[in-house]
Length: 191
Image (cartoon, rainbow, N blue to C red; front, side, top):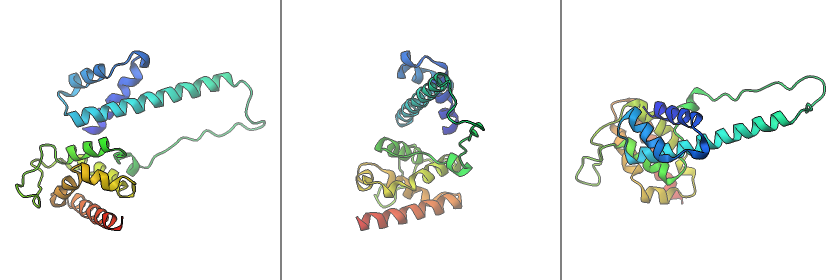
């Protein structure tokens, strides 16, 4: 499960010394815990680790500045602490920003490649479960708005992978895939 792998990566970064951490150590730990992983997923875990390291460094910096600031920022009542809450829908959304992310998404939507011999009939050999597909399709919703959208469509197989999910057994996934493809077609024709 992608969520458990991401949580493992974040936990790994939280436990190790960041200055001496190596990507190879992360890959070894991932393989011990989850078995062999495909290259696109390993590249994605490397990005997750970088984000976790950056977040950890920011948290440590905030903690250090909080400790050095001995005088209160305001007089009178203390400032109310606000926790940042994400909606449940937002938490189940894959973050897809770069070409590497798009390649990763295509690899998850068509994990064993495509079945059809003709280019028009691109059906994934293996259909991933709904729990994997839904966050990826949700993350792909913002792809058409990116300025490098056309280039991403040309360089990656994301269009074929999403097209293959149009006939997914889950009706919600199939409907989302059809809507995405319609949006992408209109975005390509406008630009």
